[in-house]
Amino acid sequence: MFRFYRYPWGSEAFSKAKELNRPIFLSVGYSTCHWCHVMEKESFENEEIARILNSNFVSVKVDREERPDVDKLYMSFIQRTTGSGGWPMTVFLTPDLDPITGGTYFPPCDSFGSLGLPSVLKIVIDNWGDEHTRTAIASQGRMITDALRQDSLYGAGEAPPVETVATSAMQYKVSTFDKEHGGFGRAPKFPKACDLEFLLNHFCWTKENSEKDLCRHMLDVTLNAMSMGGIHDHIGKGFHRYSVDAEWHVPHFEKMLYDQAQLLGVYADHYRLFGGKFIHVVEDIAQYMEECLSHKDGGFYSAEDADSLPNESSLEKKEGAFCVWKMSEVRELLKDLKIGGNDAVDIVCQYYGVKEGGNVSRHKDPHGELEGQNVLRMLRSHEDYAKHFGIDSDLLNAGILKAKSILAEARSRRPSPHLDTKMVTAWQGLALTGLAKAHFLCYKFVIIAAMTSSRLDFVERAIKAVDFVKHFVISENGQLLRCAYRGHEGNVEIPIAPISAFSDDYAMLIQGLLDLYQVVGDLELLKERVGLKDEKFWDIEKETGYYIGCARGDLKVRVMEDQDGAEPCTNSVAVGNLIRLYEYFNTREYKYKAEKIIEACSSRLSRGVFI
Image (tube, rainbow, N blue to C red; front, side, top):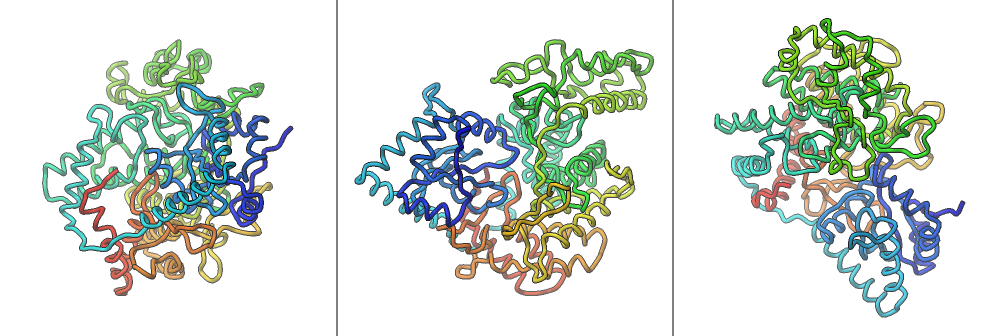
């Protein structure tokens, strides 16, 4: 088979590009990215396209989870030039690493007025082949890099009043809130844990009863809709990455650790503030993290893929194959089960919206991968279903749990999706925070460890994760590594040339240690934090915050985060950490740095830019 050759990000690739005077074809993705798999199969395994790339480019492959600094620098270019971003990210660079053009997913051929990858490659090849045009491209690339460098420089100013910023943020949330289905914005709809955390914090902070009511309403509607929707895996537990529709029905079936960790904290905080029914969701997420994402030495894996083989004889993976159901399957599996003297099949199918021809419309499934299949979701509350069926609520719950266990056992015999066993330090920190919040409010509840069948409470699991970090990703001099890996025999492995940690690894791990200290009061956790040396990320010259990466020499621009995304912004987490550390130790440096970061973001905060 013809081989498409790709270099890792580094000096070997850059030297080769300069030696051959070729542009660099940079592809950035991650292990469980659905569209990365699609582009890999359609284009990079296509011999004709691979030959074009091998003959005219120096191709470089980057895992965004291993090199977030590379990802965020060039993603900022793609977002500014195309108006959107995502993965796979495709960027053409000069040999000096200046961006030329790019996009996200490119199909293998032109379609519906959009250029396919071969057409894009031809345009770049033709332009690069003309000496005059190549000189102009290189000059333009340098200008783009200069513009990206200027974008990364913050202008300090006086921080606006907290009340002003909170009011602007609240107005934005209200204006984008989906009153019918919860969440913010239109499809595709993401959980946006950072938005939900803002509402929880604003509820506690504001003195205006009307705003408290709004926060509570938006939280209740959103968290309820998510827990009932198909984005919540009712059989396998945990939450999928996002919903392709506004109703939270049909998910993109990938599951990420950072989503589980953050939503664990959000649901736990909601239960702590308001009580109610979400304790089962807290337990559900924690069980998923323990059963499906846990290494025996305490680390948490990164993600589960969206794609898997429908059955053992299948040759092609399909998105969601592991999670969806035909009605005939459900009928056969539950044919002998009774709930309150009634056939369980009819009750379960109504309870989860299972239909004979499937419950996924074609506009939610444009590629037809879910034809005839059902994504389980609840269209009304458990209590409403109990009234509808005329069955005692507890009896119905017991029957549904039994049905779910039968379906789960059957699902376990299907080919499993790929598990990304990379253990990212930043996400271990997020997991610590989620577990600490869960333990803080419901320490009496337990989770069941899948492999050992032993009972673990939330804080014990968090301490085990701390031990993993201490033994595998913190060096003796207090320097962190970005990630560890599960080796072939199941043991933790560190590469010969390990990747040094980034500022988000420090910020989120420190936050997790502080949250855990708040729960258990173990001074050793604070000592662990003090030993973490994150000064190499600090903007020494302008004192505006923490860069994503240290000065590595293989990037022309150091990028600094100032906005939340799927994960919280490093600098916002750092501010919270610094304020808490100042309160613990009364060290002026912590307060000073927190103030400088807030001042550096004053312009954005004053404009009320929330996305």
